[in-house]
Length: 139
Image (cartoon, rainbow, N blue to C red; front, side):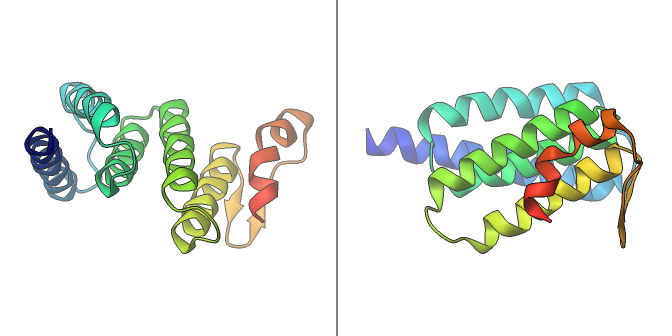
């Protein structure tokens, strides 16, 4: 079983590194849908055997970035929430990683609602207020 887990870890690590390299090479360009689907398949596989592994965190981070670059805001938000859920389980108690990720998630929600993050400003309507209730917990 240990050999199988090590092989799974190595495969996941290769996929994550490949994905991060492609993201870096692409700059701010929109990724191909095939890349996003490939990464999602790798993540589903890794979630089954590497439940508290740092590579999952890196995968969620990269998928968030891929989704946002593709214009898929809802998917980006979903992967960011999955990353936060992972961090709560993997790093119990006070965690700098969780705090930074939560802040990035709140910033994302504010931007998606049409606001700014430096300084924090948001449109003053009910729909926006509902969308940003998660961001308020961080700020």
